[in-house]
Length: 173
Image (cartoon, rainbow, N blue to C red; front, side):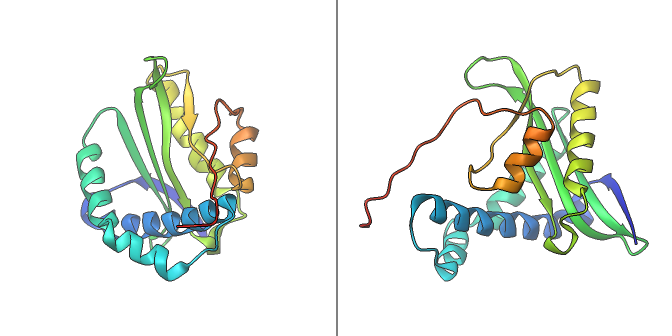
């Protein structure tokens, strides 16, 4: 098994990357329920993605961002069959608070069957190398606080907590 990284191609990768995104969103729904002390309901989460038309919305975002100079996307593939097993989507944009350009990790995904092999580190290194090539020294990533593996990973690359979003659920709807 040989894992390689290549550029994202909308014609061949869009459906798979959308599936990756939906899986990532389902995991985030589970994490958000956990952090809020709410029961997690998989069927409800799946339906929320349908109701929001999340797949179509993300497809539109990918198409809009793909050709922009300020954005890069890569797919991690298991060669020689070129089976996609991961995805990285990064962007350079002004920081909301400072207005200074920042390299943002918008999305990183590794197929669960391939996790634990330091592939996320490979993707982050690729994204950070691109940020450096573009002259961007500031970096950002948004991470759910109870996604401990991701928090630890980003911290190992020098990321630190910059702010907190606090939530509360009183147990009623």
